[in-house]
Amino acid sequence: MISKGCEQCAEGGKMVLFVYGYCDQRDCFYCPLGENRKNVQQVYANERPVEDDEDIISEAKLMDALGTSITGGEPQEVLDRTCRYLSLLKDEFGEDHHTHLYTGITGGRENMRRLSEAGLDEIRFHPPYELWGDMHGTEWEEILYIAREEGLTPAFEIPGIRAEDEFLEFLDEGAADFCNINEFEMSDGNYERMQEAGYELQEGHMSAVDGSKDAILSEMADHEQVYFCTSVFKDAAQHRSRLKRMARNVRREFDEITDDGTLVYGKTTVGAGRIRELGVPEEYYTVKSDHVEVAWWLLEEMIDDGDIDDGEIVEQYPTYDGQVVERTPLA
Image 1 (tube, rainbow, N blue to C red):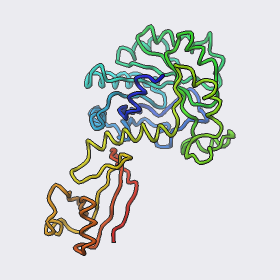
Image 2 (cartoon, one colour):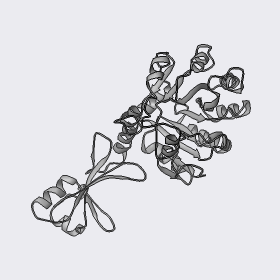
Image 3 (tube, rainbow, N blue to C red):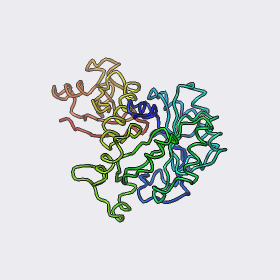
Image 4 (cartoon, helix red, strand yellow):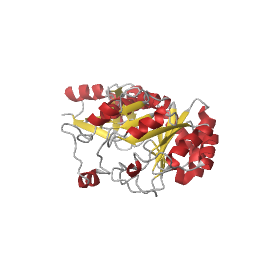
């Protein structure tokens, strides 16, 4: 089973709103947050630092967002902030803008009520790893029913560390609607701690942990309310689809969109006057402070013909930070 939130994510239509970098409950050895996100107050909408509400709206429009996932750190630790952003998104984009939130604490009835009133649709609980298998009769069982009573869709979202039947029991009992299991991964943020805990990368993979998948697939993934999200799918489908949505909105007339959702263009330090002399139409170049960006195929042709002798082909993400993927010098 795949939830509505996950369907939108697979289409690249889910904006990620990072509301708070602190998590006071525990220091999970597998926490994937990098140094730029861990223990910070800064809010991010995808890669964009948020300085005011308009930054959030602009980022959502940039990617034609179908919905938003609220994450951290721990979003419930800044409940006023989280609820304000939820209301902002619903007011701007309407009730069909689907929202889900990741949390590692139960929070209680008042939090569930406030989140629901602010516009949250799904809440995905991540119980402490040390409690897996021993949650019945605890606040972790109770909060599932409370969340539903307050109008939320309760679910689990957990890393695929090991198979655990108790999550299936909660599904069969009707306490939770679904359980998302993310393939266990190593990242820049957790690599050293993961190695200290005895985990290693799977051979041939950039992030998947060795031995983390087989037991989950054989013991849990056959359940109709369980969805196993692989690291390959996250990168190849979710991330790429989001980039393509953004690229279509930000591309200039001369930018080429690749199959990976990146933008490709030419760059030269030759002056704009020379570009005009060569008859390049205005829609095929942009003048910057110290260079000119131009259709890569035209730049390549001009260099091949000896008209100019300086340039490179640039490939970059269509995101706010515009991270460059590759530079190819032209000679």
